[in-house]
Amino acid sequence: MFSNMKIGTKLLLGFGLLTVLLLTVGAVGFFSLRQINTQTQSLVNQVHVFNETNTAVFESFEAQIASNQHSMTHNSAVWNPEVKKHVDKVNEAAAKAKAIMKSVDNIKVAEETAKDANDYYGLDTEFMEILKEIAKAKGARSEATKKVTASVQIMIDMIKKVAEDGAKNIKIEKDGKETDQPHVDIDRLRAMELTGKIYYDSQMIRVDSREYELAQTDEERTRLADAMNKLFDAVDKDAQMLREQYLLSDNGKIAAQTCRDAIKEWRETMNTVIVKLDELRTNQGKQDSKAQEVGDDLTHIVEGVRTTVEGVATDSTNLIRTVLLIIPIACAIAFVVAVIAGIVIAGGITKPIKECVDFMDMVAHTGNLTYDVPENRVRQKNEIGQLAGAVSAILGEFRNVEHMAKDLAGGDWTVKIHSKGEKDAMNIHLGEMIGQVHTALKQTSEAVDQVATGAAQVASASENLSQGATESAASIEEITASMSEI
Image (cartoon, rainbow, N blue to C red):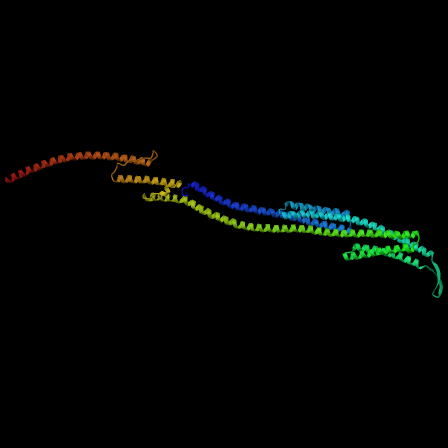
């Protein structure tokens, strides 16, 4: 099948094969570069995700710093909006990262990051509301403290005045001399003692309340709360004793009852402050936990990005190595196939042409017409077959000329020359030459016939002369004999 292909088809087949090989190598390179480009784009996306995650990390730290400032200064007007600003930036960065993320897990984490950041802001806002409630409770506590202090002062003044009015001078000996000394009875002293104790205990309550706010451990806070409750009980008990046993006037009883009511109010507001402080600490614990969750979410994203980047980098490196290995191999295979195809195609074209050239050269230089074009070449259905057929035809013409020359050399001048047309100069001139030879031979034959006729006539005359000579000789012999006799 291949041997019967036309030269143009073979060349087209060769170029087509070369084109296919080049396209194959190009396709390998194209798709490899496309994969590299895809992985590079993925790497760029991960870099963007990483940048947005870093922004979120930075803004989350800023939000935590603002929240810590809020906790330390209790200045909600300044720091709560600051927390809000940084949380919004965390949400913005998380939204940007989510928009370019490919991993479903990372998208979910980005959503959780935004939710946790919003929860963190919610906790900071809750912290602000608790601060407002604490401030309100502290205000009420301060008022209750002032009432207690005022009522105690009233009781002190009343007891002091009663003691001064009821005092009796007694003579006592001091340094060898008798002097007058005011004397106050035991009930008045006891009342003054209780009033002083109430004042002291109320001051201790104030001290313990401040220490409670600064306490760092639950054990210390529990101890201080128990101590304040005991002091509250003691103050209430002492005020009740003053009212029932020592302050007999209406104003005294009112002052003692006012003190008790103020102590009750103080205890209630103090308990409210304690509860709110506990809520504040719980809120701060939740903020810390939520901040940790945000940090964990962002760390998870960063780890995911790092893992993805490492995976992409590894895949890209392996792909580049593969491409660097495949392309030279593909080029080498393409080169070998192209060379083999070129040799096969060139051999299929040049070998039969060379055979024909060698044959014609041999005929031209040796005149040997015994060689014949192989039949398989003549049967080829392409230009080679046409060339072999033409060479075979030329050889046939040369053989015809050889046979004609042989016949002519054998004396057969009857051969016929058949021209192929008006362009067949060789056969036309051979025909003219043989015609001229025929004419010359005819003329020669006629001349020979004439010479033969003349020769016959000469022979006849010669014969007559010979006979006359014979007769003359006989006569001469007779004369001679006669003369001898004579």
